[in-house]
Amino acid sequence: MRKQLFGVSLALAFSSCSLAATNVDTMADNIEADVIKWRHHLHQHPELSNREFETARYVETYLRSLGLEVETGVAKTGVVAILDSGNPGPVVALRADMDGLPVPEENDLPWRSQVTGEYDGKTVPVMHACGHDTHMAMLMGAAKILSDMKSELKGKVKFIFQPAEEGAPPGEVGGAEIMVKEGVLKGPDVDVIFGLHISANLDVNKVSYKPGGAMAAVDPFKIVIKGKQAHGAYPWKSVDPVVTAAQMVMSLQTIVSREIKLIDDAAVVSVGSIHGGNRSNIIPREVELVGTIRTLDKKAREHVYEAMARKVKGIADSMGASAELILPLDYSYPITYNDPELTAKMLPTLQRTAGEDKAVLAKAVTGAEDFSFYQEKVPGLFLWVGGKPLDVPEEASPAHHTPEFYVDDEGMKLGVKLLTNLTLDYMNQAD
Image (cartoon, rainbow, N blue to C red):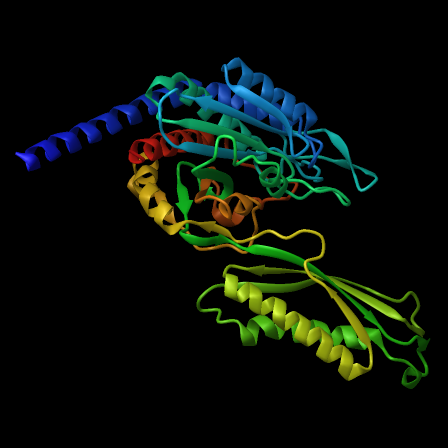
């Protein structure tokens, strides 16, 4: 008898889940035109990090129209809204980022950006060259559907519209790290957080996931090498920081190639700029190196930190120079780490929503995401949603952060459904 009852209750659960999925599909179809309209507006009016004032007002106005409890000015321009079902249950957070980039748009679209902004004291073109416009539109769509399904929810939903994911302007702080410090995961306390990123390299209607380390920790660094200036014709009178810098650049590459077990996880140490000297016949007093470290494993990250300090000091000492390592330089993102248990728990949701053959296991990437700051505090799952038109080969798809960057409107409907179904399924499984 007990087995019979269990079978009946399981069948009812699956029936209820199927019904909810059908409702979400229909509601996503009905709201798709609005999601596209929101995306086009946001794309035409991008704003730089920590300057998302009009963007925030646009999002706030819409969220208030849904009857949600809305807080503004979080981490400067962030918007946070709460949907309280009135029923007991977990608090599920959903996050979208809001900032554009100082990139000139070169797409021939009726809704292309022609906006300028100010960055580091200069007037620059601004473009949503990483798809944050689609992220906001998808989350607005999910907020609408979940608000309409309020009576069916169990618990609360916290909608987080975050500024400055691309990094705060020089001399400022911002982004997820500051939102967390200001208590975005508290009051009510968040149990789980979901986020997604549009991908110009993944076919529309597909979603990719990666348990564990999905995106790299990022640690910028600066090395200041000081030697002794001399005439270029008499190098023996110098302590040459240029030669010291050259040896240092080559030695730093051996951290990854000879000290990190790359069959486990990738790592990167890249020097992006070298500055020193101003004439061909003067050996300068000082040289600066600036670069970035990317790691997908906590132990590897700790090892790179130790090895950087060891090599910088050792080479400087061997050349009779002095060197200062500043690590991290100005900001630092942790590893974007998808909780394996949560990923396994929600995988059926991804497969049901996108289709089993369209929920793809991905490899980790050495790009970074400050969604990782939320995942340090609560279990989180960060996904990639396809935005590449099916008739465009992957190798021909423009890269993120470029003037030609483009993602298809068609990809957003899946994102809306994923955010909605992840929320519903997590709430139902939390019983």
